[in-house]
Length: 99
Image 1 (cartoon, rainbow, N blue to C red):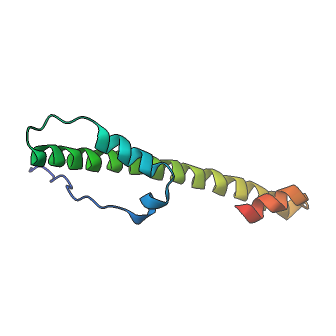
Image 2 (cartoon, rainbow, N blue to C red):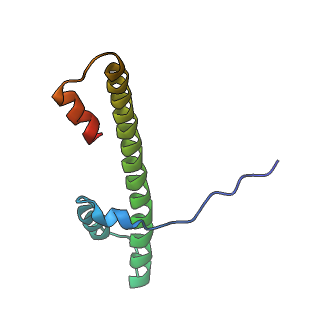
């Protein structure tokens, strides 16, 4: 049985630019010291670090968004079931609209 090849592709996502914390992340990654002796070595190290850090950062945000979506769907379902047996308050109706 052979080894499964690791997915080495990297994709820059446009939605990252909409995140307020992205600029700060880029600055932190790019300004960190490097060990490269030449300009090219230093640039390559920064690019590798950028890819690694943004990939992890993105995965964490996506996991948080999936969790938030799950929680909102559960809350909506509870209100939807409640609505079948009794009228919802104005606040509960507003919550459903927001969700």
